[in-house]
Image (cartoon, rainbow, N blue to C red; front, side, top):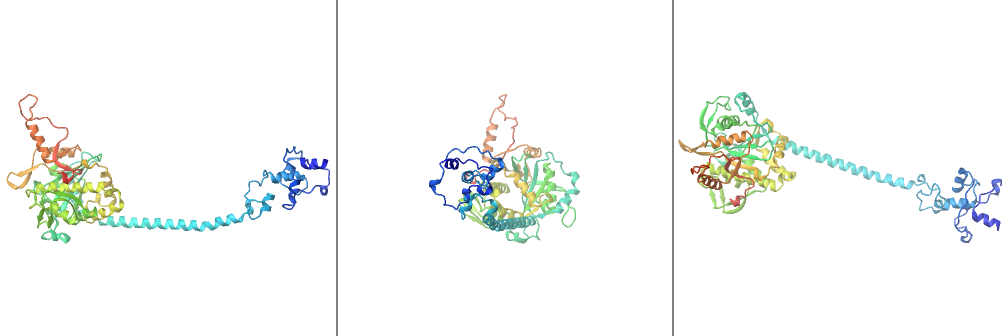
Length: 491
């Protein structure tokens, strides 16, 4: 009976007993050999008086004979030994029961990890390859677009010669860019008229003013038939022309871009920072790149000179049709160049609106054809002759609200000595140039709305009740024009 009590209580072995008399450790028995009936009932285990090192050995199920069988059972079955948390090998239950399985005994997991590593390496190589391909394609596209641009170094050189007579910039962060639509009949443009030896004409000239805060953009059309003072200019064969009072577009024909820039600067007092020359094909391709521009016609058009035949109503023009529409004059309206400029302004506004509303400027896939078309037919000064320069310019303008992208024609009237020519209306023109030069705002409204406003002011009595027109200046000068937000079908 005492022996049974001793076994069940798990008392420590007598340290004086020989090693050979130590009871056999139960953990050494074969699995399943112990009769379940002989298993001791769970109960409190008395404190072990053995030193800490011996207790550890006994708890680990050591064969040294220093721990009793009960102590060994407690150490191996309770899961509190040092190897209790070690992962078990599902294929060897006996080793798991003995509590001797360690991470070092599991080569299978390490082998699986090593087998996975080649796939990771291949994935990394594939990703690196795709990055290199994408970078190479991007670089190729960049160089292609960059190489499309033609740099006008001769104009820059001539402007440097006449630097002393050029206006001084007033607002440094504002930008004034002269846009010139070339009417040359040489090369691919010969189909639009006779070729006069490739002579140049400035069929359209627009002074684009970008406000310093980039919250507005104002495009002012300069009539080609406007009578102006053209300074002495150097021709292509290095000859010098005389200073003369003549129509505006002859400056481009006589002395090219530099002569046109100097003429505009003398006329307006505004320093031109950059210039761009665009030919017919560039305009056509840009319209095609945005899938056409929508307009509305009150009457059908049949203009053989402009090679244009369109029905009345709402319709979308492709590049070829758009070019005929903005160039037609004889069969549209009163046939004047002024009305044609207004039509050009409205169409350019619709083109800008189409690009912004369709997300072209923010979508590389759609932006590339537009840039490709523009750069192929673009000649600029050295300050805008790279894709990076153009991108920075476009990026600075993409947040300008469409209702603040304004188009107008410089105030003009028929020239007193020749009704087929134009002259400035003063002081309106000088006031406009002053506003732009000093980067101050201007406002535009439709022509009929402006006329109604002027009539209302003419009949309005002044403070003295004399009945004369009001002489008080308005905070923002207002001119006849349009904005990119206008719907051409609601005009």
